[in-house]
Amino acid sequence: MNLCEDVFVGMGAEEVSPADFYRGVFGKSRGYVRYGDDLEVPVTLSSEAGGTWRSVKLSRLSEISEGRNDAYVSPCTYFPKKSSDGSWHSSNGKRCMDEICAFVVDLDHVDPDVPSLLFEDIPDAPGWFEGVPAPTYAVCSGKGLHLYFVLEQPVPALKRWMLELEQVNRKLYELFAVPALPAGFEDLETGEVFLLDARIGDVDYHGVSQPYRVVGSFPKSGSDPVSAWRVGNTVSIEDLARFAGLDETVWDADEFDMSESLLSKASGSNPNWAREKKTSRKGWTPGFYRWLAQREKDHARLYGEYGHRYKQVQALSIAAIKDGIPRAQLEEDVRDLYKRWNACSAKYGHPRIEWAECRKAMNSFDPVRSGYRKFPKWWLEGLCGWEFGTQKRNGRSQAEHLAKVARPIRFYRKQAGDESVVGGGRPKGSGTKKDAVRSFAAAHPDANHSEIARALGVSRPTVIKWLKAEREGDDGR
Image (cartoon, rainbow, N blue to C red):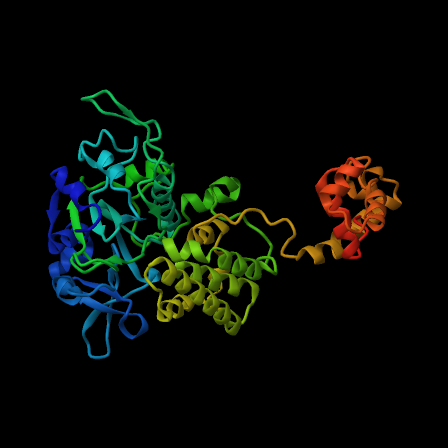
């Protein structure tokens, strides 16, 4: 049984078949209205030929994915295209999207106790997040949970709406990135209050066109097929937009209206609305790739245990493009990460990562597609699973920063008579014990740090500091 299935069995939720689930997701789309179960959808097969996709009729989706654990399908429809033999197939890729039928939130390592409290009364959903429509379906996949917010009416993937649609998607993910039910939960029978400070699961952020594991296929680990449960009703794009702070967006336009979106217009006068601030900078600061590669190696054990490995390689590939790093260097660093991850997997009994997965993730390395240079910081943080923080040396190493910036500035400030730089910014009296410590140590070569400190009435760290600086040939200033 998948991790959360007993939660939905216990609350009496209806399990839906794979065929009914996908009819529920795509049923109102223009493609399904026209073609019915013959609607062609792109199915990603991650293990086949290093990662590929096929155009598959909806009626054959279960047949194609049966017994597989590498089949994925997007909650979007795509424009058809004509092949060389005259037959029609589905396109694939974000630029070929026709309509968005659902928003999906992907949660890993779910704590079953939390969703049981949130879902127990859906569809009325008194325990659900205030002001947020309840999801339509919950899909149980191994230890993860996919929440499908199926739209009452699919939204055309027009250029004028893409920023708004991405913001709705982002806000739904942010909802689950904070602790659930922070105010606690009261048992109405006993009156006992349970204070909850737990997330439903770990947020695994994806874009609006991301394909998700096919219902009825197998999860990455586990012997039970992925199951879908109806837990709510379809939702309107207006309600989701209102939740995302986009009350003024009008979701009704001529199909060929290519005018600028409200969010794009607002970004010119109010930068807080924009996902990216306008800048004349042509790329990220040099050294960002080097910094990120080292941080990811430092986090190798964390990834070996909890995932994010595939996306970490994607983030590093994008950083390589930003800094102009050759592919050979990228592959060398990813190979090092690959070895660290699998060493951790062997030690703690976690699933291995295959080199084919790393190689596929490196497909993000495409310097020709300059759009990768626009990926904002928060997006890469989401891929990595941790915050970058603020780097104040602009990519320079400490030695470079001291030689090129800090020491020259200090020199000219001293020349100008700025007393605040005397002593390197140390407080008054700092450094006065240097000679006493070194003289005592020279006269008593057998004395240890603690004995020197007691004899001179100084702290042990002060003794260590000046003796270490003497050994390294540094005057300590």
